[in-house]
Image (tube, protein in one colour):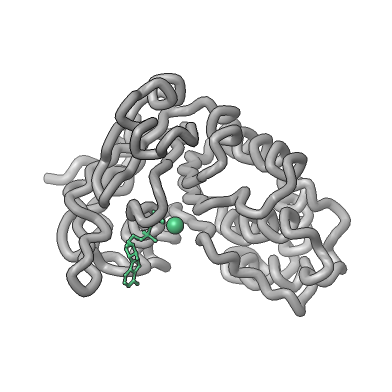
Length: 247
Ligand SMILES: Nc1ncnc2c1ncn2[C@@H]1O[C@H](COP(=O)(O)OP(=O)(O)O)[C@@H](O)[C@H]1O
Ligand SMILES: [Mg+2]
């Protein structure tokens, strides 16, 4: 008999990838990847370009089916569930390519995901709450195309928060941001964690990762190359070698 859901929820593991393989026309983007994400934590994922980081997120979120391997969310095998079904269980993602509508206002953008989760009367309040979490108060009527790049990234995060997920996957949230915007993004990620959201972050910006100071996994050639605290990863000679001195 399966354990009741509340028993699974009590586990300190929220998400697991087991032996994930994804082959694209002969390229093994993921080559037997194992990963465990702890609940109520921030978890960083780094690795050279092409290591398979974005592919991993697509598998975790069910955007594509893996060639083989499994994904477990709160102990439940979700490998065969579609993206919307995983979202209903509490998973959310901000993709590497930003998905906001430039020609609509901030409010119109947020309205789209909020409408799926709230009654119409509740939407203005919910929108205001999401914007407050993202340093975007008062921008409701602005055109998204007029926002800074950083503000657009935060809005994209806000849209993925609309369904109040318990797990949020962020693929390169600080790409193209100014140093100040990057610092605010770090604050946003930490505040989400304090609200009980587990946040998994793929990033290249080592200063940002250092600031989060969280468990860090290194992907290389579609496998888990190293895992540890950020300090351990930063001092790992093999990791430094694959980054060729950029750490
Ligand atoms: N849809 C796809 N079709 C073919 N090859 C892909 C596709 N997506 C990713 N790849 C390849 O898989 C590998 C991993 O890509 P990706 O997961 O985007 O890496 P990362 O995000 O770590 O930079 C790369 O070699 C990439 O070219
Ligand atoms: Mg990527």
